[in-house]
Length: 133
Image (cartoon, rainbow, N blue to C red; front, side):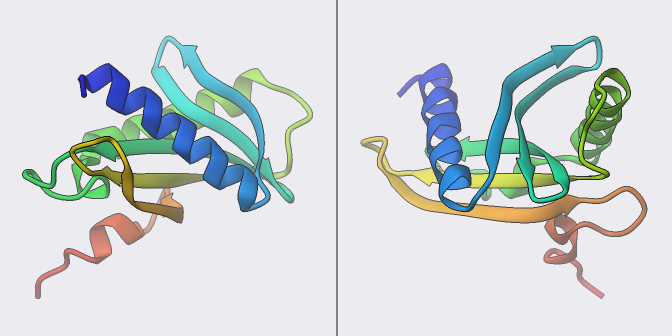
């Protein structure tokens, strides 16, 4: 599968998972001058910004491990840009990650929702699993 096909399939799988988990999809592929948010959803009293990471090979690690510190900072900037540009949003927001691993035929081997994966001022669940004392 081509990279664009993998990404498109991943976002579709992520939307299905999120709907099953009670998220209401508000917007997909929101773009602004800072960049793009894959999915904007609402869950209870949260607006949730979702980064979808899909990989068809584990050669360079898991999907969630591919999120660099720079990307985390960009996601926070994107979330803030969205919140500042929209009114009547729920009172709270967070950034979740959907990590998807596909086999060679494009079938999902793993789909994992990581809630509150990227936080403003504390270590994220994405980096804490790689901590080595």
